[in-house]
Length: 276
Image (cartoon, rainbow, N blue to C red; front, top):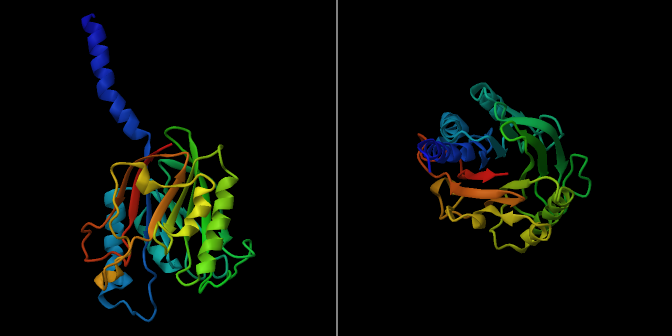
């Protein structure tokens, strides 16, 4: 083997891991806890946490992330701070600005938005509506993106299942699974959010039936730490999840580190590194 050949092989070995890393995407899901007008959260209120939320996002630098429970003024604040990101999604109460958003933010330097829509998790998904035994109107924001690095496309569905209605949670996963099934074998799919259910819940059979798999189980670099922390008031639970189809999961983490305040929300963000 000539010296030139050896040099070429050496350079390729150096460059290939960097190219592989460029082609991965970082995806995050985070229930940021709505800003209560009654200020019921005291020292854990939004005004005490919002700078730390921005610090978390700037530290982790996700390429795309879904938020749950976000109100319009909270999103306005994040828009002002996160200049490399744009968002899609609407308020769940009227389809415009009222009520909580299931917003999806994406880094415009890495992703191009192809399409976006919001659907209600109810018997009338095209209209702002309450479904079954749900306590609140619930939505799923569905966005399709093109990776500017690789040219590959994927769909991210961001949702927040109801915290009261058992039937609503089950029927909601059926609706989301149906949307995912329409994309089967054509476009990789991510479903993420606050599911208000442990991974063992049978409601997720609807996901498994269309090929969606829990991201935690698809990599050896994973975490099963609590995602709902209740601001430290109880032992917490693992109720925030990612499910994927047609996607390789390189790493899964629960982001329970220190971003400057004891709790950036009553949930910890979850994060995965993926390859399309």
